[in-house]
Image (tube, rainbow, N blue to C red; front, top):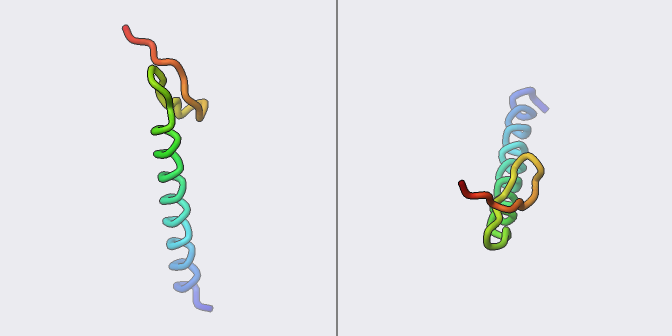
Length: 51
């Protein structure tokens, strides 16, 4: 295998894994209940405080 092929394969795999991670994140955001928001730091839904 050539170096170019290995680099190209790596880029494709990384792009795919990034797309999967983004789609999972979107699903988690949408699953937060009313009055809660997605907290990227804790990777969970937290109560929204308005003010």
